[in-house]
Length: 453
Image (cartoon, rainbow, N blue to C red; front, side, top):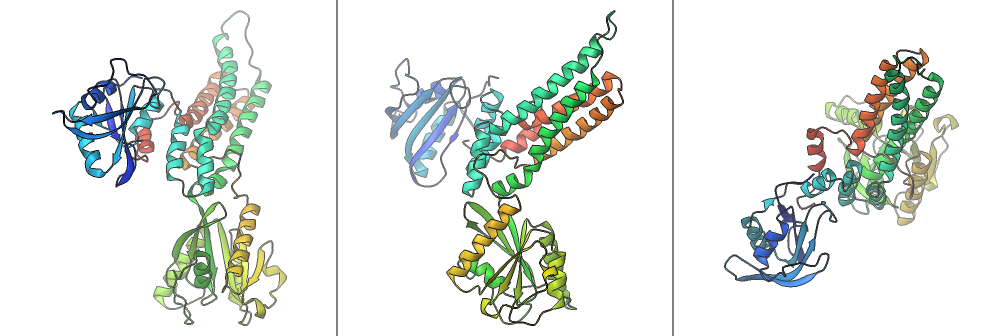
């Protein structure tokens, strides 16, 4: 899809740096570049770095650097692209960019280069999202998952599902097209049902990967819970390696939740230090307890701290039993460990430590990473996972349509009814790779990108 306009933007981060890159893409990219580099040869050698001076409209030198021409369609956007590599001073960059715009290029919108690459068939929508996720990755696990999406690993699985559904649709539409012929083509409902079941199984595998993919992309939320003054804030500070939360012998110091992020292994964790869980008539503290309970409900993991120096409290037992996320029970003050009844633990992991030295931190980190693995949320190096709610919603809608198609096939309904749901499923699956995606959704996706990408 050719664009009439030529766009330009700085492709490197703003601010002072050693090198700044101005990217120009579109049919007039080379003409725009010639206004800044009058001595470019008539036939510019593609994909070669040329050292040149960059000049303004009066011929005055603004900077010197490297220029490279990448003719379409063998470029990132699929269009003619020129990149100017100059010095990274903001003033110099602004002067060069002003000359580029004066020569006829338009300022690029956020993500417009990648959007043109998508529209020109250089990559699909899932791969484009992989670029955005790679740029914004905050952990090794997130970067690896984004790279797999950029390489087309997710797209390959989605396209495999689409091809399967297309084969089933051919069977159904053949029965429709030839139903009036003398030799009627009878729809093989058993074969159709088997094909649909295979597609549903493929979708279910991807849907089952969503929590793991979401955690890899966005980080894992772990709530630190317990009764007042059990050591929750001490644990947060220990994990962060700094005094982020106030630690006080006065019970009820934490009235609202406090969150902070840190890396454990390759995984980004968001720890939430919550208000102590207890019955209270204090209105402010009660609101803190309510918010703590809500944070626990939404968490991926929980650490419940029991102060082992205090007598056993019925609230601890009730709180532990009520915890829904996979939970690590942490008994503080290792040397004063006491026994809790076995029914309080169930399948929950247990660790005793004092929360006051680096050895304790390492023990907690090891226990949390093991709990993450047991919960099926551990990042894996090779497997494909969906990580965006958009992907999950599209697959769920496709699955619903396929369930309706299976029901219609089981009742040997009219082929037209089966075809209707099959087409709907194909459309929903196609949304993930951009086969059918409304412009407003495309706009929201590419708005995630920075200008220049």
